[in-house]
Length: 452
Image (cartoon, rainbow, N blue to C red; front, top):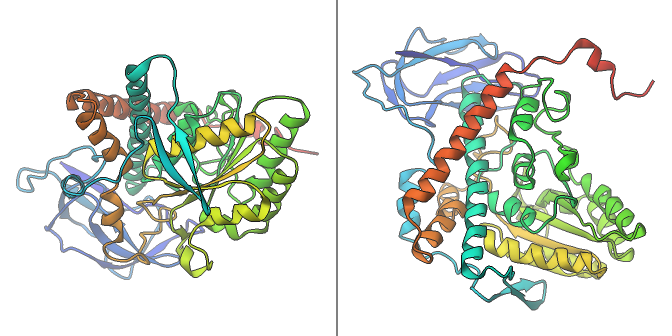
């Protein structure tokens, strides 16, 4: 059977792109995720990856030709001669899983407490007690595992569909950062608010937003969480406290501060959380928002997902400090540095910060050191990274790390975790089918929610 290779939507304008060269010859076999060809967009020269394994067959669009997004440029065959199995994308490549198994994992959250670095001082965080003992703790870990798996499966499935030209627009994905979203949101109540960024999917899923509504929004359908008007960068689910994500770098920080101030003025014990990247820590809104929150004792938690890169710029090129959390001292609030690849450590830090905010003791800045496996957006393959950097971070994968802990420390059957992964994949595929079958917005809806 032959599967068409279509030109995905690349570049800022979504216009035609020029084929520079094919990376493999016709009739060669290629693996899923391997480079197929190089193209030139209105922004840069990038590689297009294979959405599946197979043998490349023609007719191929020739080098130098201009093609439109969605146009068929070749085929991948899974006939008997190619003998390429068609399989779902694993959470991590087998080679990476093997490498990770040979590396001594960093210490996870101890059963009772763990030291967590806070700027220049150290605090002790205690594990939550819910009256259910060890069994309750394991169930919380399983819930965290299931949510992280759902986020990973969702993002990887969208990535494969994007390579086939089946996802409108672009994507800003969070593979590798799941522990931050899940760890923080696990410490929140439903009526607490989160404010996300241009990379919001993980945060929304972790907060409990509808997977179907998120997917329909990405497809621009009427059943989307904001009616098909926002797309992937502007998601919301007010029912679970997920406010509209903001694609402007650092812009949600003062907004979250305002929400937190309103909670304090109303005498409510609710908390507002702002997620942002390391690049936003150099934006004026970061300093203004944190300073105001500190002065007002606002019940806010500021979560910096430091994945090392603001788009393609390494943080080391933009600041003279090692830890962004050190900046919290200038505003008189705690600054916590936490391993963003360890969901237990993130949860412990978030739980303490949230409790502090609810008690009227003001905001906290949490810096979670993490890593995004994919590029800034789907037309960015991350060529600016060091050759071995990606593998080093994937060896610390948060999902594989928790899997090892559940199997090794709590003697859970691996088949139980495999079943969780299978159910997550089924949920993802059902959500995509829901989005595809959903109706387009009516023309009249374009006049709703606007000022005249």
